[in-house]
Structure formats: C-alpha cells, structure tokens
Length: 297
Image (cartoon, rainbow, N blue to C red; front, side, top):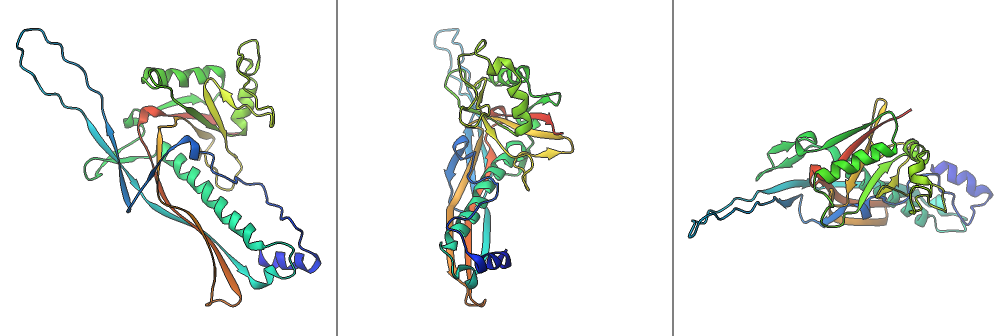
C-alpha cells in the first residue's frame, strides 16, 4: 500500500482520496441492545413469567411460587485495526493522510460490531450461575424458517407467525429487523404484495436508492454477499439471514472505539494508526431471533 501511495505522490496527491466499496458504518448498532461492561465478563440477567393461582376457599394457605431467573455470559473480546504510515506518505500531499487512515481503521471496527452481533444470533450461549451450561439455538426455542426456494411474502408471513405464537410484540411495540443480501432484496422486490399500492399504503421502496426498506413490519438491513468477510453466515449454498427483535441481541462494550495516532520510535520514520474496541455479544432469548435460510446462488 505504501509504495503505491508513494508512486502517486510523484505526480500529485488529490485533495480527496477515493474509498473503495466497503461497509463504512455499523448497520446493527441501532438494531441491538448495548450494555457498558467493566471487566472481562458480563452477566445478562433475565426473568421468567409467573402464573396466578386461583383461590378456591376461605383462609386458603398461601403458597409461594418460584419464578425463573437466568443469566447469560457476554465475554469481552478485544479487536484492533492497525496501519503503519511512513513519513514519505505525507510528503507533498494536499491533505492530511492520517485522517483517511483513521477512517479506514474505524470502519474495520464498525464492521466487526455487526459481525459479532450476527454471530451471536445463532451461537451457543453459556448460562447458569457459573456459566457452565451451554444452550444451543435450537434448545433456546430458536426457530429456522426454510426459504431456500426464495424469500417470498408467504415466508415473511411465516416469520411473523412465529413471533406472534411466541408472544412477541403483542402487548408492547417491538422493533423488528431482517438482515438480507442483494439476492433476497431481488426476491422481495418481485413480491407485488410488498411493492404494489393495490395491497399496501405503506411505501416499501426507498425512493433514493430503489431498495426495499420495509417488509411486513421488518426493517430490512442490507449486507454485501460478496464482501471479503460477509456479515451473514454462508454454509455451502445456504445463507443464514437474521430476523430479530431489537431486544434479541445484546452487545456489551467495555471500551468504546478509540483511535490512536502515535510515532513509533522503534521503526524508522513511521507513524502507527490504530483503532481499538472491546466488545462481546449474546442472544438474549431464542424466541426473539429467527433463522431464515435462503439459497445463495
């Protein structure tokens, strides 16, 4: 990279640097819960439901009832992105190159936030007093919707049905999101129930970019299928898309994104640009997250 920049500087360094296509910000930060964490582990606490007991006689003895308490571990993980900037990289430039490098390393951390959140959606969860019990997605009441024949309006109805039957969003308003790629976007764009005013008064197509933005109450979050490290997991020919409530995934953050630009006295004429962030994620409840398997062609 450095030699390429040096060659460009022989001619002239433009006042703006072209940024190659990439995800530039976190797309799931507003779609997940966040907790500030101190230390290496965080216990995400939960509480179960309770059923009332009918009183059938006078002076009936009161019987205490147990209510389930649970805890899920969020293990903190440290992430860094580092670039070395040679002194020659800043010669004869019309801009400050450090700013562009700082943006590059910060974008790497933003993508990592989404990656660990997506990973937590279907990952095993450590629970129990000492986090020694492992709960899989399936044993956590997780449901998989088979959409390998195409993500259609009927499949969206199936996802919605699962949330309703799990008593999610019936009494209090829930914010739902569905993570997809371009292939699923194309499928949904072909569903007239979503795009035609004959079926809905809700304008589902984003007027600015032409992508479908909402579908049956789900805010659609688009990810690149051809990214060097795709956010949505790809298994052979199937892709694991994520349908979730905003409460479905919690990201613990013990250190917010910090960017340090420092001289490296141990290396000749070199400045180090480094972004650091400590975070971890966990699925809060299986009923709040659905796996939607599609076919990747």
